[in-house]
Image (cartoon, rainbow, N blue to C red):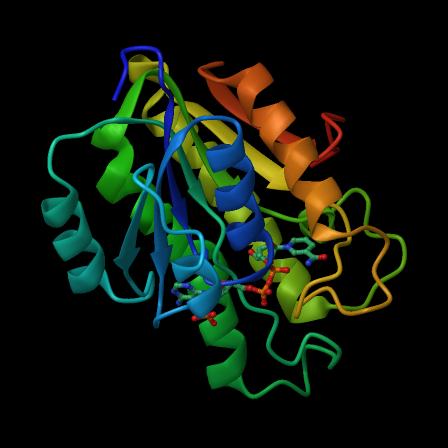
Length: 228
Ligand SMILES: NC(=O)c1ccc[n+]([C@@H]2O[C@H](COP(=O)([O-])OP(=O)(O)OC[C@H]3O[C@@H](n4cnc5c(N)ncnc54)[C@H](OP(=O)(O)O)[C@@H]3O)[C@@H](O)[C@H]2O)c1
């Protein structure tokens, strides 16, 4: 690895946006460690000397600790937690079983923050920790309703990420909350506005432009700052 080559850890890369980010950063000359929950043929198809594939479920603290130990002392310019779920996103909050609502909250808000805490010592100086949020996590921009449990989980992620950045402000940590656009993936559906290539190219530009800026920023894939 050359001294100038950048490195990323992309968490939740079996398909969709995570997979697209891996492809994009590899194409831009980065070294990438990508995680899957179960073996992903699409990720395996990207095999190269610049790609390391690992397995982790972000809801499993022991598995996250094992990954941290397995990866060793290497620091990353970017750690991007992409993994997320949208279970029963179309049902209003009172209809969704408590256990389902709790699981969406755990996977979308608690697990990314626990992952960030576990791996913050692996962010290189001048690097960034990015978390995949959504414009649906904005309380201020919620003018259409819907996606209630999912919205609440991403709003919780935003809140927890701000607190995380403040808690570690003495280290100058850089936390990026990123909205990828409404994207044609398994989660976004076929009717979504943009394709994966457009979203991930935009997000990679945003990440590269904002590497290492201290504090928390909430931005979309075009670099626009979003209202909390
Ligand atoms: N698509 C959109 O329009 C859109 C808009 C705003 C925000 N987002 C956010 O962008 C992120 C990626 O979404 P996507 O559209 O690419 O969705 P997707 O195609 O459904 O992919 C979701 C990814 O998250 C992984 N994942 C879920 N739970 C996990 C866990 N507990 N541990 C590890 N990995 C886990 C999945 O792994 P498996 O393959 O193992 O299930 C998969 O790789 C999510 O956080 C989503 O909320 C998407």
